[in-house]
Image (cartoon, rainbow, N blue to C red; front, side):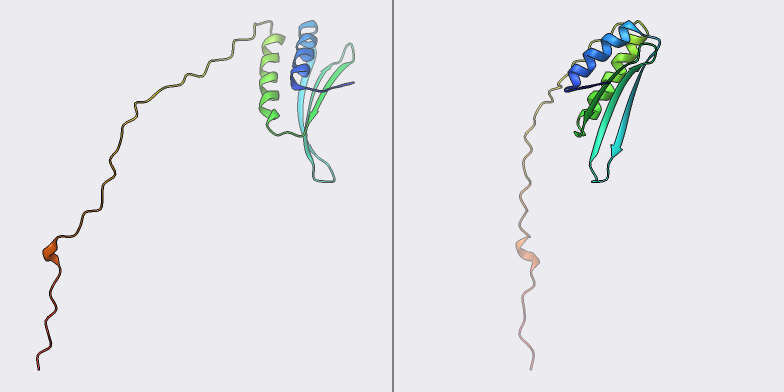
Length: 120
Protein backbone atom coordinates (compact mmCIF):
# COMPACT_ATOMS: atom_id res chain seq x y z
CA UNK A 1 0.00 0.00 0.00
CA UNK A 2 1.42 3.33 -1.11
CA UNK A 3 0.19 6.75 0.04
CA UNK A 4 0.74 9.31 -2.71
CA UNK A 5 1.39 12.98 -1.98
CA UNK A 6 -0.53 14.85 -4.71
CA UNK A 7 -3.73 14.38 -6.70
CA UNK A 8 -1.82 14.51 -9.99
CA UNK A 9 0.56 11.80 -8.84
CA UNK A 10 -2.41 9.66 -7.78
CA UNK A 11 -4.00 10.17 -11.22
CA UNK A 12 -0.89 9.19 -13.19
CA UNK A 13 -0.21 6.11 -11.06
CA UNK A 14 -3.89 5.05 -11.13
CA UNK A 15 -4.05 5.58 -14.88
CA UNK A 16 -1.04 3.35 -15.50
CA UNK A 17 -2.51 0.71 -13.14
CA UNK A 18 -5.86 0.85 -14.95
CA UNK A 19 -4.16 0.61 -18.35
CA UNK A 20 -2.23 -2.47 -17.20
CA UNK A 21 -5.26 -4.17 -15.57
CA UNK A 22 -8.42 -2.59 -17.05
CA UNK A 23 -10.89 -5.31 -16.00
CA UNK A 24 -9.84 -5.84 -12.38
CA UNK A 25 -8.77 -2.39 -11.14
CA UNK A 26 -11.22 -0.81 -8.72
CA UNK A 27 -11.38 2.81 -7.58
CA UNK A 28 -13.08 3.91 -4.38
CA UNK A 29 -13.49 7.29 -2.69
CA UNK A 30 -14.37 7.41 1.02
CA UNK A 31 -15.29 10.26 3.33
CA UNK A 32 -14.28 9.80 6.97
CA UNK A 33 -14.55 11.64 10.28
CA UNK A 34 -12.31 10.74 13.21
CA UNK A 35 -12.66 11.28 16.96
CA UNK A 36 -11.29 14.84 16.85
CA UNK A 37 -13.99 15.85 14.31
CA UNK A 38 -11.47 16.05 11.49
CA UNK A 39 -12.92 15.26 8.07
CA UNK A 40 -10.90 13.77 5.24
CA UNK A 41 -11.20 11.96 1.91
CA UNK A 42 -9.42 8.76 0.96
CA UNK A 43 -9.11 7.72 -2.69
CA UNK A 44 -7.97 4.16 -3.29
CA UNK A 45 -7.07 2.34 -6.51
CA UNK A 46 -6.76 -1.42 -5.97
CA UNK A 47 -5.96 -4.31 -8.27
CA UNK A 48 -6.77 -7.63 -6.62
CA UNK A 49 -4.78 -10.09 -8.76
CA UNK A 50 -1.41 -8.40 -8.27
CA UNK A 51 -2.23 -6.85 -4.88
CA UNK A 52 -1.25 -3.31 -5.92
CA UNK A 53 -2.93 -0.66 -3.77
CA UNK A 54 -2.54 3.10 -4.26
CA UNK A 55 -3.99 5.57 -1.76
CA UNK A 56 -4.37 9.31 -1.54
CA UNK A 57 -5.62 11.12 1.56
CA UNK A 58 -6.60 14.78 1.86
CA UNK A 59 -8.48 17.04 4.22
CA UNK A 60 -9.23 19.66 1.55
CA UNK A 61 -12.85 19.67 0.46
CA UNK A 62 -11.96 21.35 -2.85
CA UNK A 63 -10.15 18.22 -4.00
CA UNK A 64 -13.36 16.18 -4.00
CA UNK A 65 -14.21 17.61 -7.42
CA UNK A 66 -10.76 16.70 -8.72
CA UNK A 67 -11.10 13.14 -7.41
CA UNK A 68 -14.48 12.76 -9.12
CA UNK A 69 -12.95 13.99 -12.40
CA UNK A 70 -10.18 11.43 -11.97
CA UNK A 71 -12.75 8.67 -11.45
CA UNK A 72 -14.52 9.79 -14.63
CA UNK A 73 -11.28 9.77 -16.64
CA UNK A 74 -10.28 6.36 -15.31
CA UNK A 75 -13.63 4.95 -16.44
CA UNK A 76 -12.66 5.88 -20.02
CA UNK A 77 -9.27 4.19 -19.59
CA UNK A 78 -10.80 0.97 -18.21
CA UNK A 79 -13.17 0.67 -21.18
CA UNK A 80 -10.33 1.22 -23.66
CA UNK A 81 -11.53 4.62 -24.86
CA UNK A 82 -9.46 7.76 -25.10
CA UNK A 83 -9.94 10.42 -22.46
CA UNK A 84 -11.88 13.26 -24.12
CA UNK A 85 -10.31 16.72 -24.01
CA UNK A 86 -11.64 19.02 -21.35
CA UNK A 87 -14.20 21.45 -22.75
CA UNK A 88 -13.07 25.03 -23.03
CA UNK A 89 -15.20 27.45 -21.14
CA UNK A 90 -16.56 30.05 -23.50
CA UNK A 91 -16.86 33.55 -22.20
CA UNK A 92 -19.89 35.23 -23.68
CA UNK A 93 -19.52 38.97 -23.69
CA UNK A 94 -22.81 40.74 -23.29
CA UNK A 95 -23.10 44.36 -24.35
CA UNK A 96 -23.02 46.69 -21.43
CA UNK A 97 -25.77 49.26 -21.49
CA UNK A 98 -25.75 52.26 -19.27
CA UNK A 99 -28.87 52.64 -17.28
CA UNK A 100 -29.79 56.06 -16.06
CA UNK A 101 -30.87 56.13 -12.51
CA UNK A 102 -34.27 57.67 -12.21
CA UNK A 103 -34.06 60.69 -9.99
CA UNK A 104 -36.89 60.95 -7.54
CA UNK A 105 -39.33 63.44 -8.94
CA UNK A 106 -40.33 66.38 -6.81
CA UNK A 107 -43.99 66.43 -5.77
CA UNK A 108 -46.15 68.94 -7.64
CA UNK A 109 -46.12 72.38 -6.06
CA UNK A 110 -49.88 72.73 -5.77
CA UNK A 111 -50.41 69.51 -3.87
CA UNK A 112 -50.01 70.93 -0.36
CA UNK A 113 -53.05 72.42 1.33
CA UNK A 114 -52.68 75.71 3.05
CA UNK A 115 -53.45 75.80 6.71
CA UNK A 116 -56.23 78.16 7.62
CA UNK A 117 -56.54 79.87 10.88
CA UNK A 118 -59.19 78.73 13.37
CA UNK A 119 -62.54 80.47 13.39
CA UNK A 120 -63.53 82.16 16.60
